[in-house]
Amino acid sequence: MEETRIKCSECERDFGNEDALKMHNAAKHSSRLKKEKTTINYKKIRNWTILAVILAVTFYGIFWTAGNMNGNSVVNEDELDFSAPRGAIHWHPTLTIKIDDKIQNIPPNIGITNTVHFPIHTHNEDANAGVIHMENDRPTKKTVTLGYFFEVWEKTFNKNCIFDYCTDSGKLKMYVNGEENFDFQNYFMQDGDNIIVEYNHFE
Ligand SMILES: [Zn+2]
Ligand SMILES: [Zn+2]
Image (cartoon, rainbow, N blue to C red; front, side):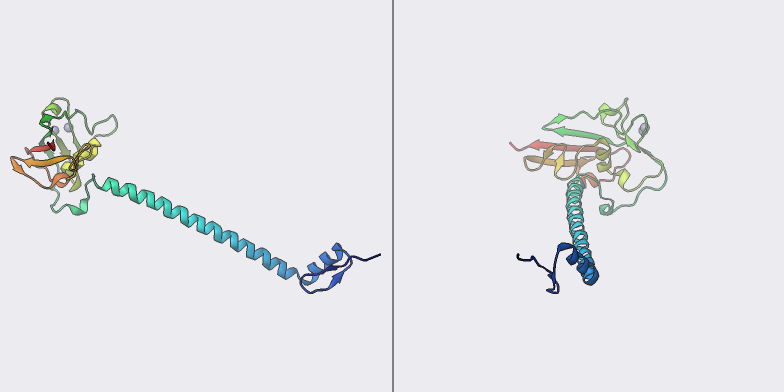
């Protein structure tokens, strides 16, 4: 009858059965087994790290893109080359928005809710005349811009677009007290200003 021998893969010694090999491995090669285990753990950690990095880069990319799209319509304080007024203000510029010669409705209570009263807002009694109330105890550069009013209103306004109307399909112009103005969302509004934003589709 032929005897089955089992060989140790590490040192080529023969063993009569599985148990003997196991005992031999535990006695002679246990440090190697441990090492192998440790190596596997490192691999696992490396894979998780790679996955985490990929996720982080993906999310960063998404937020960066979203932020950039937003950046188009919001006021960037660093771009404003004027100083904020000192002390409290209560000013009333007037805004008229015309799309294809039709005056657009500016609703009352923009910037006013039960819980929030923005330092720029409209009131019932004169919103339909386009009066913007700048009631601000501590004005910053950003909060006195025309763009800030649109931010509070949650509408788009910049040199390219008013609402959803953009310069790819029409002409956008802005006038302050009868003179063309090119500051758009960065315009520093003054008390009594008469501001007109005009959009006309190409013929
Ligand atoms: Zn007021
Ligand atoms: Zn008010």
